[in-house]
Each structure stands twice: as C-alpha cells, then as structure tokens.
Amino acid sequence: MTTTARAGRRAWIGLAVLALPTLLVSLDMFVMVMALPQLSTELGASSTEQLWIMDVYGFMVAGFLVSMGTLGDRIGGRRLLLAGAAAFGAASVLAAFSTGPATLIASRALLGIAGAALTPSTLAMIMNMFHDPRQRAGAVGLWAGCFTVGAVIGPLVGGVMLAHFWWGSVFLLGVPAMVLLLIVGPMLLPEHRDASAGRMDLPSVALSLGAILPFIYGLKESARNGWRPLPLAALAAGLVIGVLFARRQRRLADPLLDLSLFRKPAFSVVLVGLLANAMSSGGTINLLAQRFQLIDGLSPLRAGLAMAPGMVAAMVSFQVAPLLGRRIPPVPLIPAGLAMTVTGLLVLAQASGTTGLMIGFAVSCMGTGPLVGIGTNVLVGAVPPARAGSAAALAQTGNELGYALGVAVLGSLGTAVYRHTIELPPGTASYSARDSLAGAGETGAAAMDAARHAFASELQAVSTVAAAVMLAAAVLIATTLRHLPSLGRPERAPVPTPHEVKVPAA
Image (cartoon, rainbow, N blue to C red; front, side):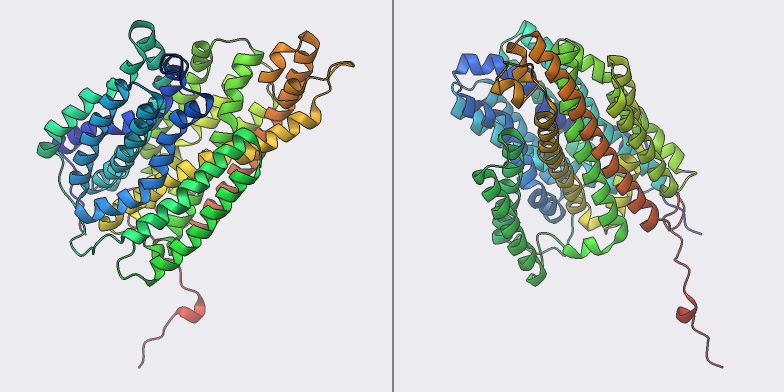
C-alpha cells in the first residue's frame, strides 16, 4: 500500500502567499460598489462610462480565464502567477491615478486580464503543492473562502478608505500584497507545467474571447435593461462563436480547451453544480441587498453588516466541509449541504422581517461549503495534474457565467413578477413605481406600500426558483457521483454488471 506524501510547513506558508492574490481578485470586484459615486463625480464620468468602469473588470476576468488557465499549464503556473501579479500591481497604480474615465476603464480592463492570470494559477499550484487528499481539501477550502472574504470586506474596506483618503486609494490596496508575492513567490512556490504541451492556438484564443465576452455582456445588459435587440444579438453571437470554438478544439492536436474533460462525470457534474450555485447567488443577493436598504431602511454599511452572518457562515462551511469529507463521501455530503441551501432559500421566500431574512441567507450560505470546497477538489482532481490550470479556469468561468445568468434570468423573472403584482392606488400612474422598487421611492407613501408588497412577491418567486435550481443540482450530484469515496481513500471501482464479468478460460 502506497501513501501520499503530506505537505510540510513550506507548502502551508506558500498557501498563505497564494491566498493574497485570490483575496484581492475578489475584493477588487466589490470595492467599486462604494467607490463609484465619488470617483464618477471627480472624473466627470457619464452614466455609460460608469457602467463600463464597473463591468469591464468582470468582462475581462471571464473572457481570459480559459486562455490563461491553459497558458499556465503550458508555460508554468508560477511564471504566469508572477507575471499576473506584476501586471495587477502596475494596473492598480494606473487606476489609482487615472485622470479621466477612459484611463480608468482601460486600467480596470488590464486589472481584469491580470486577475484572470492570477485565479487559475493559484488553484493549479495548490493542487500541485498538496498531494495528500485531506490536506488538499483543506487548502482548497481556504482558497475558496478567500473569495467570500473579499466579497464581505470589499464594500466595508472601501467605505473606510473613502472616509479617510481619496477614491484612488481603494486601488492601491493590492499593491503591497503583489510586491510581497513577487518577492517570496519564487522562493516558496514550486513550478509545474505540462512539458508535452504544444503552442497556444491564437485563433482559439480569439474565438474564446468572441464567445464569452458578448455572452456575458448580453446577460448583464439584459438584466439591466430587459431583453432588448442589442443584448439578444450579443447573446446569439456568443453562442454561434462558441459553437465555432468547440468545433475548432475538436480538430486541434493541442486544443486551447480539451473538450474530453467534459466526458468525466466528476468534472462535468460538479461544474454544473458550481454554475447552479453561482446562478442562485446572483439572483438572490442583489434582491436581498435592495430589501435591506429600500424596505428595511438600512444604510449601505448596515445592509452589508446584515449580510455578513451569511458570508461568515459560508467561510465556516468551507473549513468544516473538508473535515467532514474525511469520513463522509461527497455523496451524500454535497447533496446534504445543498439541501440546507434549499432550506435557506425557502426561508428567504417566506420571511417577512429582517431577522428572518438574515437567518435564511445564513442557512443558504452554510450549505454551500461541501459543493464549493469538496466539489472544487473533486473537479480539479478529476483531470491530470498538467491540466489543473485549465480545470481551475473552467470552474471560475462557470462561476462568472452562473452569476451573470442569475442576475439576468432570475432578475428578469423577478421584474416580471413585480410588474404583474404591483397594484398602485387609483390616480397613481407612475412608470418608475411600476418599473422597480427603487423607482417607487419618489411616488408617495401609498405607492411605496404597494411596491413593498410587489417586491415581497418578487423576492419570493426568485428565491423559490433558486431553491428549485439547487434541488435539481443536488439530485444530479446524488445520482451520478455515488462512486466517489471520502477524502483520502481510493476511489471505488464501479460494480460490473453480469454481462461484463469475464470467466477465465480453462
């Protein structure tokens, strides 16, 4: 019986170093929530420019993840990580001292490309640094928790920085961490790459961007302005180019994306689960934030604090899940966690007060730990080590697509429910009140009361559909991944059917 070498102190220090860029990629997405009003005023940004300042970072991260994941497998994860760190630091300084909206948009685009280089590299290196399944699961849980920490502290840190410094200071938060990574990374982080990999296929890179960027743009614009011709055309273009991309990958000897990875049930099913989880989160978190501020009357900071217990619950779940995974196989552990998420979403659908909403949100977040922590470990562990970067990039791309789908599809469903449900008092003909809860704030107390009731129906509908999506994911995982063992144990071979049993010849 062979044993897998356990990682020592050096690997755990290296994990702490890798946690920095992971945290900052997440934090940079959320810190803009607080900084946008002030910087827009000082830079004179138009409404369209404000949208691009907010969105271009996410567009670039999503668009370049697949290419960067494959590039890391081919040139080395550490090399790509350090290059991404240098680019992220430089782009952060450029963003902090931008003199106009165009410069800031360009800086945010560069930050997104650098962030796309950092994210898959960190997870791929973790998979190569920790070979013991139990240690690896714990390390992946810590890595996944960093994204949640960034989401929690992003708006809070942004608020504190803006209270004492100018708007550009929020972009300088990552510079010291990137400098530290560049100094200690070469000493602590091992290099891993696929020695047999061929050259990058540049047409595939172009097709990848041509598929993902219009698709994400179409989803976000549809969520913001409804299903209009331009967003629908962007969605269609993304799908068509995606088909062309897939056809090209099948013909290449060294594809940018190895489509054979999707033939592995452990890979494809967990990827669907992660996408479903991101979709339900994207559909409910924005509505919950509106509920706390526009109905319960909380300030943005207090609304963030009201959601903090849910984020803390998620972080605890990420750390506990690997410990449970040593004794309990992924099935039933992951479906049990998703059942908790479904329960929390149903509580959100029925809760009428702030406390009930906080409890429902915390319960739903608590259930995500096994899927994100153990599921990510299963997904990346299902592919050869040389493909770890590609697998990590696909996992993060699925998260980006899932979140955008949640905002667009579930958001559109919620808007339809709101508009169908609202019953304004006689004589009230306000389009803004009929359009959204935010628009009802200037139409009088009676119209606002009607909007509150309609919004409650909207939140109920979206939470219920999100619960159905997560229940479907739980059933899919429970029925397809039953053969996976608990962490640290060899995988059970499937039991052969009678016609597969071969009788040795006499």
